[in-house]
Structure formats: structure tokens, C-alpha cells
Image 1 (cartoon, one colour):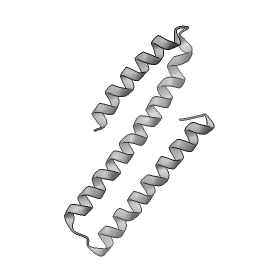
Image 2 (cartoon, helix red, strand yellow):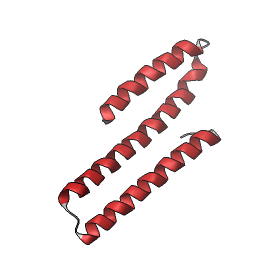
Image 3 (cartoon, one colour):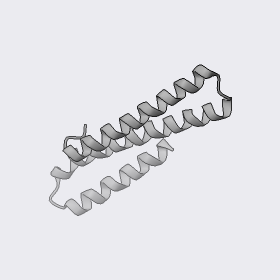
Image 4 (tube, helix red, strand yellow):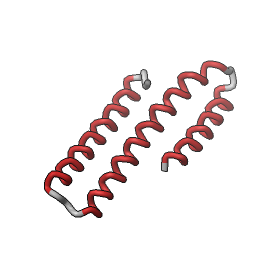
Length: 91
């Protein structure tokens, strides 16, 4: 879980955007919108959730592993590699 005020603010903003996308999806389904735009909205929601998950995971990795080593540069680089790998799976 993000603990710094900036990280919390960023994560909460993402959650609010996802909520807006879900609300728009619900409205589209209620009015019987065409399948294409509905599927596009679902894909956008999935991408937003994946981005949220990746951001929280990145924050967690940084909090857990940066304090374990004296070589912050090397650890940060390793964390960046793991985050990049995980983000590629979310696409």
C-alpha cells in the first residue's frame, strides 16, 4: 500500500478515474449501447485496473526492498526491471 502522501494521492486519483469509467460502462449497458463501444470501455477499465495494480505493486516493491541494501542505485535498477516485466504481463 502506498504510504507517502504523494503516492496515496496518485493511487486515489486512479481509483476515482476507474470509478468514473465503471459508471460510464454501467450507463452504456443500461441504455443498450452498441457492443463495440461497450467492449472498448471494458478494455479501458481493464487497462486502468492493471495500471493501478502495477502502481501499487511498484510502491510495495520499493518499500520492501530499497532498505535492504546499501547500493540503492543497483536495487532501484533491479526493481525497475521487475516492475517493467510485471507491467508487460498486464498489457
